[in-house]
Image: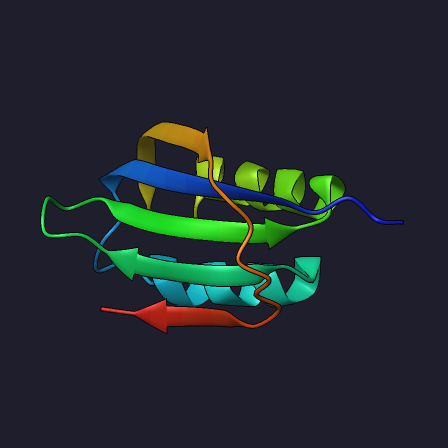
Length: 92
């Protein structure tokens, strides 16, 4: 039996307008996680990531750094209930 976890992550800094969401989607595909990523009105990026603990940790490492051009100044992480997502979506 494989354990599955889900985390909600809010990323602070220069994270909008730098390809953050699209890079996150590609990183999620490589890691094999489901979830979503979106820009929030306050200038942060929010992601929810669901998968094995190792895959989710890999995504958290990516989100703490971001793609080239981003400047991550902080990351808030919280556990959230599982949804059962296997696809990863980009929204607003």
